[in-house]
Image 1 (cartoon, rainbow, N blue to C red):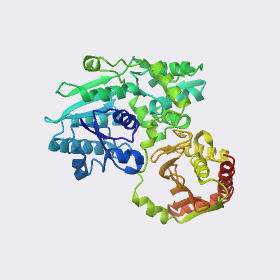
Image 2: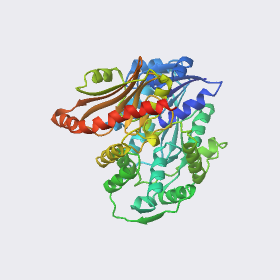
Image 3: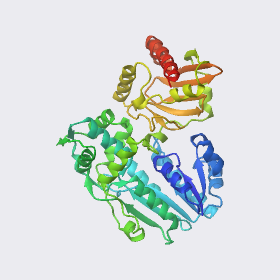
Image 4: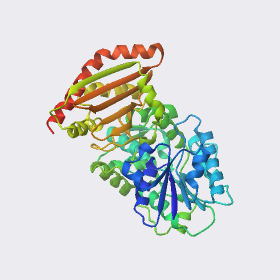
Length: 473
């Protein structure tokens, strides 16, 4: 079976890709915006087409000769995402018809259209409607609500609130009903959809037991061995609730607001098609899904995270931006007596629970200030304490380039009056640590100059601490 997977670097896509690669009866092709987000081993073993759904020629190349395609694409990173999502879906289904595709498998969100439907959910519904409009290509439209798994947006929000706040004042949306589902169950449905024998379009709502968000938080506390008290305050507005999530969870304000707006409506199953057509799948209960997610985090087995596909895409244009950086803070240290492998392993372990080698408190203050103005802050941490891959988030940075035993390049995603990068590079017998900054206007220049004294201490101590740690490995 020839299968195309889109969105393979996203939260669901990365996990689905792993499962599809384990199946001997599937010839997998990936359609990606940037090949750099794939490991070299993966690029050698499967067919990869680079492009996006707004490039019809690339899309036609990706869909040519394919039997089934997974559509796991959304444009939430853009302000015009609702319109872009419709254009993307229309392009995809038009080219799919042209190429003779038999089936599209799409994952959207639970919910119905009404006056309370959030713009984000409305966009997911409209995408499903566009994909289902074809008379030549079958669409299996799965709809899931709250997805629980290590690294999922919903789980990270609930977990962070429960862990950090013994007593919570909650808005009225905590009484809204939803039907959560474990991420592994979502993947199982998507895999089984490949072998579905019915030829008509189907909308399949998936989920486990029906719970309020309050019940989810209390059950999460139970799974974590904590006791928590929730005090409802019905006057808390969407904006106040969004700021609350922004400050106490990893999600930035814009994401928090989109989620809170969606919580006005119940997200519960509207049909029994999951049970009717996929009776072999028995979704696990919420408490079990939370325990499984916690175990993955504790054993360093997190496959994907919600934040890894967010923010600016790394491409060749950014290379010019770095070359044009007006301000550069560069430190160089001799490492001829230290293993290059040890130095590399040390600097790619930066961030998250491992800290920043020097002046961690200053980094935490900067993260708090970033959160206060709606930025991503430091709470995203890192997926794995020892390993990094291109495209994933690292505190308030994005990993944009890695070369084993040679280089790590990070792109700043915090709120800044300009654009910034942080690079660690091994060249000959030297470790070169460079901070690049391209200011925006006068304020950007003032920002840089005001931080020069702090940079002197922070970056000097950082490179020395890396060498010291690498020497002791």
